[in-house]
Every structure is written in structure tokens, then in C-alpha cells.
Image (tube, rainbow, N blue to C red; front, side, top):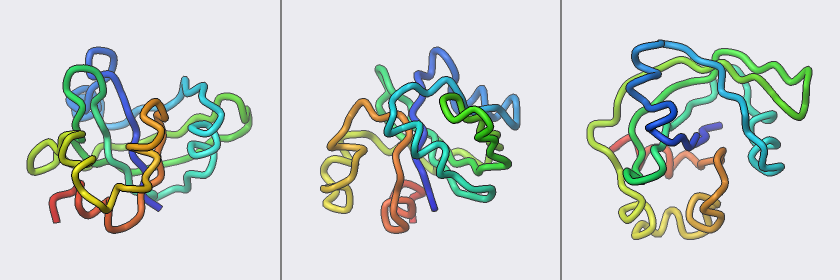
Length: 126
């Protein structure tokens, strides 16, 4: 299942993930976002989304491993894939009816958002 992970680029950007190649995605506190993080599986595809001033999808990644030993702080290891052909802005996402019922636009503060296949492909530029 694909997911979108939100990050403040001044804290940890897609460029940081490209440099590091892998990272542990943790520190999530919202109960719904935590549930989404705990639901991830090895191999799940990810879109990294920059919040703050950018408000755009920046690149793709995938889940390497999921450790839910501490359900309040699941540790999801992710690895970089590639930058998107071009950033996809929040305005473009909101204008696309594929996202009409998506938590991405309906629950703006949710930091881990499930995507369906069509949404994932749109963000990838396909």
C-alpha cells in the first residue's frame, strides 16, 4: 500500500534522505498517523511531502522494515528511491478530484496519509 509522509524540509528534507539513503521515520504523535505508521509493511511505497513554505510532494521512497515493539513509537526504516520528475504542489493535489476524499486534503495536519494506487501514480507523474 502506498503512503505519503509529511516532513518539514528545514528539519528533514527529501535531499537529506537522498544524502542518508535510509532513515528511521519516527516521532509521530497523532493517533491516526501512528495507526497508519504501524500498518506499514516492508516494501510499501512512499511519497515524501514537504510541508511549511513548500507544500509539495518531493520524492519517492520505500519501507525497509517496521518495528512496532513500542506501539506509541513505531520505528519505520525507509530508503530513498528517486525525486519526482517535478514537485507536485498542494494546490495541484487539491484541484485533482482523485484526492477529493483523501485525508491529505481533508485532514491537513495528518503526517502519515494512506494513498490509493491512482493517487500514488498521479504524484509520481504517471
